[in-house]
Amino acid sequence: MKSKASAPGKVILFGEHFVVYGVKAILCSIDRRVTVTAEKIKERKISIKSNIGNLELEPGKAIKEIDSPLKPFYYLADKILQKRDSGIKIQVESEIPLGVGLGSSSACCVAGAAAISKLFSELSKEEILGMAIEAEKTIFQNTSGADCTVCTFGGIMEYDKEHGFLKIKSEPNFHLVIANSNIEHSTEVIVKDVKSFKDNNENEFSNLCNNEHELIKEVLELLKKNKIKELGEKVNQNQKYLEIIGISNDKIRKMIEIGNESSYGTKITGAGGGGCVFALTDNSNLDKTIKRFKEKNYECFSVKIDFQGLNTF
Ligand code: MEV
Image (cartoon, rainbow, N blue to C red; front, side, top):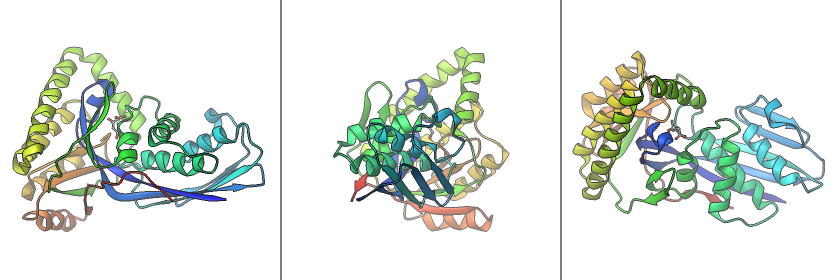
């Protein structure tokens, strides 16, 4: 028996890092996906194949002892096999570059939880999300849950840790140009660095959280009115806050300058320290913005908002 699921990647439009401390974030899922196929097998093993490597182990191993980016899949399969005799074979196909802030690991956790659980039972999206967040915690303990939430439910949403998500009903007609610094980051390490910044600068960090909170309120109003240029100014404002908490670097700053030559605003998306920036555009400056990044030899592509979220087959 086989089952298949696919989940989209994501872009955090506003509020990364501050969301870990309870501030609201605004994020959307994007039209790049991870597809996971799971198969029940007789042999008592968990076998995972992906374009970033393979992992094959017996069930029952301690998660702490597994040193592989495929650990969340093992965790999910092992949990489901606890009271069962069979094994599971998993195949992962991804269109999302890894470790650059576009939600590849969250999409893996969501599609993995859906495909693996479907071999044995039919779960709701909320239950799948719960499993996906647990799996994500095997690689990043302090997750806010924002990424897995948007990869499950799709679309554009506001999210905070206390209240969960609320879909944003307007469908803004912007285009996001993503440019990749090709510096891989560990979300866990960068979130720890931000915590050190917070611990050493309690007042400043608390002011930044308040500023971010105000900015998000304004952004929600601008989204309703589809005011792309003004949203771009908020993107640049948010980037300033990210600069202060120390998740930017020289390469990112250069990329932001390039983006701002023709887009309405450019910022880091996700953990930072490398990874990707996005530039906010509409039809009038989309091609120009892509061209500018490409001329400077950056991997660059445009994405649209995905409105489907998790799909199971
Ligand atoms: C990572 O994509 C987003 C962070 O805010 C961490 C999190 O929300 O769990 C940096």
